[in-house]
Length: 301
Image (cartoon, rainbow, N blue to C red; front, side, top):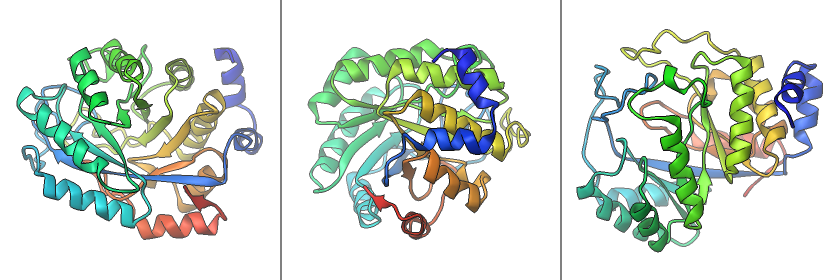
């Protein structure tokens, strides 16, 4: 669909828009989970991020955690019906001294029956992508975060194309791609439509949807009113219509939606949930997510 066509849909009656997007939604909801395997001290200046060394957010920082902690987190995720588990590390690109350790963590996760390995470790080069694929990594996560036209307003220490190049490497080496956005960072409606179209061109299997949770001491700390619940729902619907074969996934910030609207999204747009806590913000109790899925008459994939 063209940008004008998607904009026209975006502005139509909300009930009709959600009914349209619901045609692409299955009766299953996929659960995944993450472990924050290295936190803080990131050299990049992403304006939303608590982990950036450019801002004094006073978060706890720590180096790469050991394998036992990763395995325990993966087993906990499995007990809550997650069938995908991601090792996540801070930083622009994997530190040389950590990369081989991360590869070993992925191999350890792959040994857990019923869990598919994922990783989110920053911008990759060709050699890294190949090594991850050879290690059996199933899915790599790397967001575009926002559209190309707005990216300079969000980060200036790397480019949108740097992120796109990593997405291309992931697909080149046969791994699945998880690639999404953060809504509410000051982008326009037109730019939300641009995101949907750019993701359609990239073609990820999974599209994580984050909604900005403004972090004190970051440049976006006062961005509480850049998107409301109705526009979140409209954006989700447009994303699903533009990307009917991709799984839209609730991630950080979804509690900015009421329980009613979270359920509405799960009925009409969203087919995945990142359960538990996120990187530096609190999530939802997995038991509550399980109850919600059951209430909606859906199955956990």
